[in-house]
Length: 98
Image 1 (cartoon, rainbow, N blue to C red):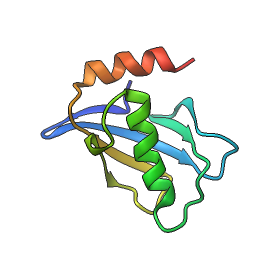
Image 2: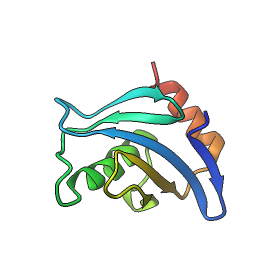
Image 3: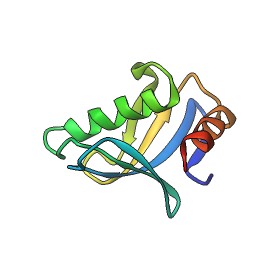
């Protein structure tokens, strides 16, 4: 899973976000990123907040453990995950990706 990278202060997760979808869902892998569809429009940070909340829910971790570190105005985002190791994230995502 090339989208899960070890960082000094946690794990970086590379995500591609498609806003204004009909429902929130984990689509799968697109290139070297995890693809998400989110219902929120990309206005005033709403999609970024929903992205963080949705990833926290997928991983079963508190929302405070997911931070947006790159891609605030882009569909290509980098999230910093604390409180989980890379293998735990890979195992959880392997179960969720169809």
